[in-house]
Length: 253
Image (cartoon, rainbow, N blue to C red; front, side, top):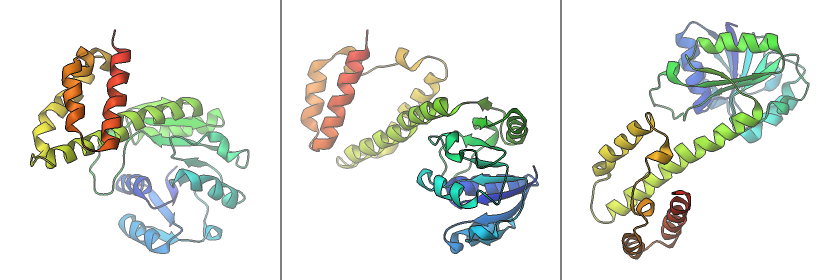
């Protein structure tokens, strides 16, 4: 599958497109609802921009890389024109395709994507699902050009993976944001926490996270917890602290 069409032009489509282009794949077309966005990505990967689904040409593989709530619309509007189609969503079931195509599936890279970030694609887990064994094998072979970490994952498992990723990545980053604001309010640079954060990440590569929990909640240090709560002026942040503290205390043996 060397002839690819990208349906989407956002962060995921951009990363996939750039990787494919740099590894000798031909990206025939890039579709985006906004032609200006399609043009920006197309210019980077020597492709042709379109914003009209009726202009989609024949290709070996069609990759739908758009927001989750747009996938069904695209499936319903290109169903008579293409085959060998995948989406890249973590939380959207393979059933979104119905039986509208002969070969369809999911190509989900388990990573957070931001334009401008440098990523080693070989280290990114790729979750594969397909509607038949033949297409599954083709997707596995295709994915092996991306990553050394290929996983056959069904829609239920993928949804749980995506949920867990929200907790471990998105929510964690929000905690970093709260920490940054707390520090800045006292004229302290967030960088002071970087060694602590790095050490935490290093440890969970070796041990189960539940074995590594520290802090006042794990120790049930009520005096320190009470002092912390007094130091928080923001009502929402105080509620988050209280909720997480209770969760840790309830899960500690």
